[in-house]
Length: 144
Image (cartoon, rainbow, N blue to C red; front, side, top):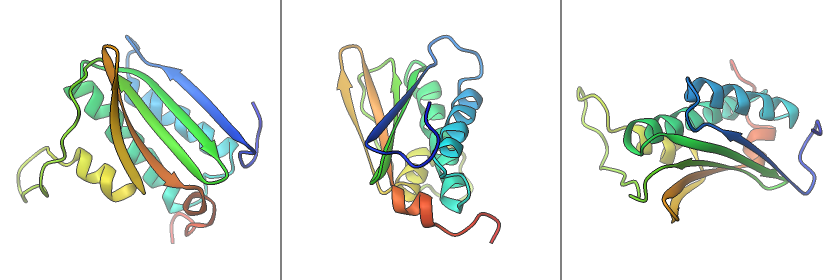
């Protein structure tokens, strides 16, 4: 495993099918990858962890569970994919209404990422989000 900014493209995979606590494990896996790539000192890195949590939570609650988390990084972007067990594509509802629980997951994904989407394959799908590398590298230092 290399340390420092990704040169070329680096991919890390975490199998989550049947794993207890997939959201916490996915966050820890992502935190370590961000640290290894030198992308752990900005507010955007904290946003990335929230983004991963939302994608994993949506898979756990609405898509027959999380199967895999895939992080792909290069000089231009961090690509996050969460694979699950249904082919039903996610739909972002209009802005959630105040005082009502739930319904904010994809709204948060949209707000924190530069791009997001989903695609089906076989018996499942991948919901993905991307964050520009420049935001991870040069964003404001966390805590400011």
